[in-house]
Image (cartoon, rainbow over all chains, first blue to last red):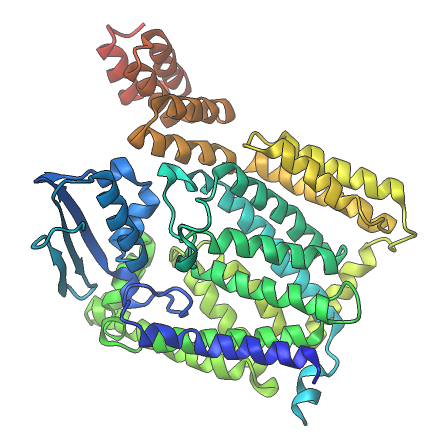
Length: 120
Length: 426
């Protein structure tokens, strides 16, 4: 078979299927590769805060503001990486996570309220 | 018509040429705009890549390396736009662009993902095609299908109450005049603002669905071309924050423009160009050298190294006279952008802004010294630099910066207050 046709078929298949992975995933705030320009999810605003032994961790002092912006948009992969970094920076301390996201329609989703220690 | 006949039939060569020029030309400009934001890479030794399973295996991207990659991509994009050794330039550009994009979620722009897909398609297409230095017609057809899929999913994403009732559009509409225009329209119609925005939201979904279909069908393509251009133009005019996405789309809409119009435009352009001429070592080397010097001259990390790489890359193989000299256009573009835009200043401004918050302060001072050197009329730069000098006890230098701010903008209250805090105005 003509390799150009194989290439076309593969590209089209990937482009048709890849966006569906968003709808099958539980990662609601991660819209990469799903062609969801201007979706309501893009307008979600999250508040992410950590405490270590009761004192607030200053995220702006640890992370570039571009990463903080991605946290505020609820990007799950970034928040997980931030979790790991905050634990690393506060080894041995009692780290708690407080995380809530507000939708463009005003709906509030509590994702973490600091009930459990974050770090193993 | 069989699938093979559909995909591999002949196309309009002028359309491929026009699209190549527009798409890669906008890409060169877009990459230049990206330069301003590259100081964020590697900050705090933190990174999350798009391919997260690789995190921990691949290193955190370094600022200097990213600058180098993007500068090379600008040069390669200009070469692609001009059709110079496309079989070398396009795959290299595709590889470099994929590396810079997938390495970090710091770049999550949807239009950059679209660019990743398209440069991959074009880069692979010129390798798969026996003929040299032109975008194969089937790659243009493939891009039409990719855009149709994109429009379809973009419409699906908006089929939910928070979009259709206008609330999302109200948040996304950032420009003051856009909001005022919507408000005026609502008053004129005697309805609520949200009703107007809801109508706009429904219209956007409808248009994306119509575009997904009409742009694929030859008989309706001209209608889709007009509709789509108006759609993307209105998105740009209303100042939604989407970078150069509208410009990319305007370039890509050459895929749908009436054939006669494209042919006439390209032939007129070609009539102005000299013939390619014989392969010419002198012109090739001269063009490569001019580009290399222009790159190395830029006040950015690693620019000298990138200049050397650019020279080696561009001086092989030997090009026809016209193409060799045309490489000088890349240099002209770089110098023009460096002089005519704030990108280089902003690169150091954003770098300094970050290190001012997170430290180290010495690095922030260095960055802001570059800011005021590149743009002596930038008042905020003088104020920030003065503040940083004060933070490390360099009072005289701080005073000099505040005084400089007052020279640039007499009566600037922030500079006056700071000078008074240092013991009065001079």
